[in-house]
Amino acid sequence: MSDRLKALADAGVSIWLDDLSRERIETGNLADLVKEKSVVGVTTNPTIFAAAIANGERYDEQLRSLVAEGKNVDEVIFGLTTRDVRNACDILAPVAESTKDDGRVSIEVEPTLANDTDATIASAKALWAEVDRPNALIKIPATLEGLPAITAVIAEGISVNVTLIFSVERYRAVMDAYLTGLEQAKAAGKDLSTIRSVASFFVSRVDTEIDKRLEAIGTPEARALLGKAAVANAISAYAAFEEVHNSERWTALAEAGANAQRPLWASTGVKNPDYPDTLYVTDLVVADTVNTMPEKTMEAFADHGEVKGDVVTGKGAEAAAVFESLRSVGVDLDDVFLVLETEGVDKFKASWVELVDTVKGQIEAVK
Image (cartoon, rainbow, N blue to C red):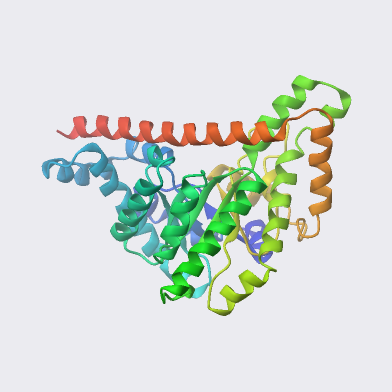
């Protein structure tokens, strides 16, 4: 057992692996990570599946079977990815049974639907039915069109991982969408205790975009703010979470059995080599949150990460001051978040194209 990762888990941070492959499942690697590295959840995306399928002969037999059944490329992707998520859910089922919120495995709705509410709802329902495991989470993007889809899906009793959140303003809208869905589920007589959700707040990309602008401004005041925006943004998000979960609206739902929608720190691999490689783990430790890490970041933390206790609670004013300073040196924050969401959706869609192309190639190879 990694002492550093255990200390992180003991501080209340749920460690989720941002990766999945049939090889991890079938070799016992995922089970080993649960046992030895304090991993209690898994997140996936189309790029992760593209890499797994491109590099894994373990998919060939199912591929041949699906092709023989006359399935098209989208149906093949659906079959391959839902099987992996179902099997990962089974590996993590003991965690889900022994903890209140963990043991979850996420799978994304088709990214090309990010701006189509009804199609997103249909995709989420299809994935939920096919995976057919209570510890699955369906990933829905926090686009304006995704918000009503989140409400509708939660109202149906489906558990959701809301992804691609960059701004605190949008995060507030996500929390509202979740609470509205819970209220609708309650009105329909559903058991709220079975519904789970996390809100995936993206971290590293905020520094990447804002640092680029600070470098362009180039003043000493601007350069002094390099590397500070992403953590401040996440801390501000946590302050918003606390505010909402201290409200009468939330209290009424909690009394009816609802579970809090935990903040999840996503995109926590450090992209700037000048920054510590555990920055977005060490500086975001607070209880009842999730940090989903690529294995490289997890290994870095296991090797030299530090847990300094809760470094988030009560820091909202400091975080707000960072953003005031960013504005004062000339950073257009509204534009930053617009660019990040637009790029995020574009990358989301591009990763789907990558997966489609990969599977097309594999289909040709097994014919």
